Image (cartoon, rainbow, N blue to C red; front, side, top):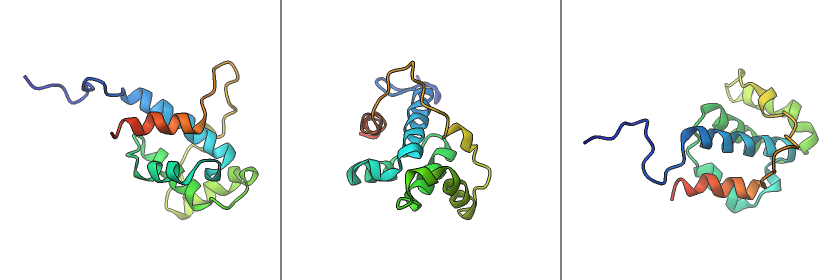
Length: 119
């Protein structure tokens, strides 16, 4: 019997969970910049198959402006994404304040959760 394409295989992370992890990670990186994580983590993210196309654009823009101070990212990331050909990213999602009510995971923990999927 064929399994539905929308059903995750045993042990697979549901797509909605992946989207949530990706967004939480990108929100952290938009506040801290990519220099806040190790080069190994950056390489893992570069190989990651992002679930949402906008998430790939945001990561690529973050990587391209890696030398910019985190305080300038709110203004520089939209400009960089536009130069890359993606002017319509909903940046407000990525710069939302952290939810203080929920326990916060580190960028390294979030990256580990994403990269487990590809192993």
